[in-house]
Every structure is written in C-alpha cells, then in structure tokens.
Image (cartoon, rainbow, N blue to C red; front, top):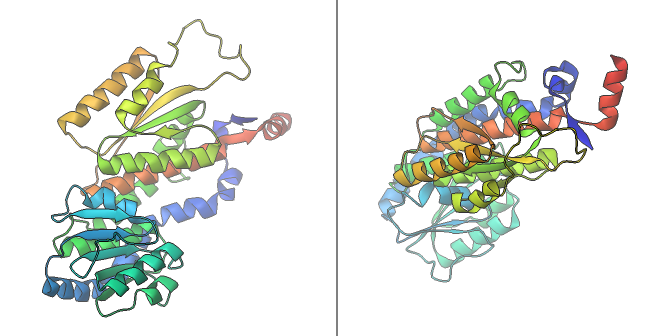
Amino acid sequence: MSWFDDSRLDDPVVLESADPVLRRMAEAGARVRREATDAASAIHEGVTRGLEQGRPRAVIAAGPDSRLLRAVLEPWCPVPFVAWPTASLPGWAGSMDLVVVLAPSGVDAEAASSAAEAVRRGCQIVVACPPHSMVAEHAEGRWTTLLPTATGDQLATAVVMLDYLDRVGLGPRADAESVATALDEVAAACSPFHDLAVNPAKDLAIALADTSPVVWGGSVLAARAARRVAESIRRASGRSAIAGDAEHLLPVLEAARRRDVFDDPFADEVATPRPMLLVLDDGSEEAVLREQRGRLQAVAVERGVRVETVTTDATTEVARYASLVLTGLYAAEYLRLGLAPDEAVSEDVADR
C-alpha cells in the first residue's frame, strides 16, 4: 500500500533520487534543437531531391513510431496518407509513393524491415535515424534520403521528419525552434526547484494522487497527448488511468457516485478512488470539440468529480502537443515521487 506525501515533492533528497529522469525531461528542448541543427544540411538536400521528383501518389508512415506522424499529418496531408506500424508495407505501395520511417534508436527490427521493403519496391524513402545504424543500413538505396539523428528522442526525431515534410508541401508548419521553446517553458515552470505553490506539475500530481484519472484531449494531437499522459500515470502509480474519446469517457463520469458532504473519507480503509477529469486543452475551438468538452465538464460538475485543465500557449500544433505531453510527464514523475510505501511513511513519522 502506498500513500501520497506531498512534502516529498519539495524534499531535496527525494528530488535528487529522481535527478536522471527530471534532467532528461528538462533537456527535451535542447535535444530538439540539436537534432534540427545536425540534420539541417541533409534536410536541405532531401528537399531539393524531393521537389525534383514531384508530389508522391501517397505517403506511408512505416514502423512502430508512425502513429505520431499520423496524428500530425492526417488532417493536413494533400495526398492520401496511411500509417503502417507493422514490419511491412501495403500491397499497393510502389515507386510513385513516399515512405517515411522514424527510428530514433536505429535498432528497431520492424522499422528496418519496412525500410528494406520500401527500397526493394523502388519507393521514394525518407528515414530519420542514426547514421550507420541497422535501420540506416537497410534503407540504403537510390531513392533514399537519410536524415541523421543522434539523441534517441522520439519527438526530436519526429520534428526533423516533419520539418522535411513541411518544406516539400506534405505537412503543416513544424518549426523546431517553436517546439524547443515550448519544451523549455514547461521545463522552467515545472522545475523541481519550484515549490508546490508555483509549480503546475506538482500541483497536478497532488490532484492526481487519490483519484482514477480520466484524460481527454479533443483534437487529434491532444488525444494522442492524452494517451501518452495516461500511460505515464499508470506506469508511475500502478493505478488506473484511462484516455479516450468523449463518448467513451462520459459513462465513466456518469457512473461516479455523487459526492456526499457527510461522507467520512476515512471510513473505508480501501475506498475506491473517485475519477478525476483531466482536460488537455491545446486551444482548438472547433464547435464539435467545444461541445464535447462542455458535456464532459457538465457531467463532472454534476457528479462532484474534480476537473483539472492543462493548457498551452505554444504557437504551432506540434509545439502544443509537446507542451501538453511534457507537462503530463512531469506530473506523473512527481506523482511517483510522492507515493511513499507505508514503511517509508512510518519511518518519516518516527523521525519527526
């Protein structure tokens, strides 16, 4: 059994134990800048070649990391687009199509298999991965453009690929500096050196502590961010956390028992945690999304369910996605730090 002790979030010893994780999150913006800078020359050469070859019949995002590209490109891509996360390609893919592959580590067997199949079929292929890696070797071919990466960061690698696709007219603006700036702003606001009173991620961790989070993001990218945040909460706490579309989350909120002001929170030692609605708001004001958000919030208020909202002022869609995800990751890590086993709590009480 674990109990949440918010004093641990400002305890230097506890925070020091999490330094490797917190430091890596704080360096997210720097990794985006590094990858964008290192790949700039290759992107320029690839764009020149891509424009000479002309617009492809379709774009296929291949490999396990293709879902992020799908979330960004599906609403924007001017040609048919498909994400193909398995170790193959659609049967119709051929020389008129563009295959893009993200392989941050460069050792993914499925990504390597997809790249090799694209080369065999004579597809145009753009691969973002470390040079001299297994994926790079399988992608070697006449129509291959390699965008070199080095950090192993999925988002930074995706930004490099999206920058290329933006320049050849196949995707939205994905300015690397705006993404890096958004990540830096989150890292500064959620720094472990900021105490509970001014730290949004620590405050969110406290809100998450005794609940079963229900995470919703309206737009395609915000919905993907919601899934990433819910997954990080599950890993950090070992507790339930779900993300989904509004119609899937509404029954969960509607099933929550109305809060009674006379309830004794200590009457049941193992009481079931109440849901909490966590809204990831990327600023989208589409009428459908406003209506869904309003329904979720209305049901939550009617059932006495706590509502928390994470917002962002980032300037591009990818930057807003990055900001929402990183805020959620910080909150999940602070949640993990605050959950102390019974024996730890007992020892702390004894020391005092």
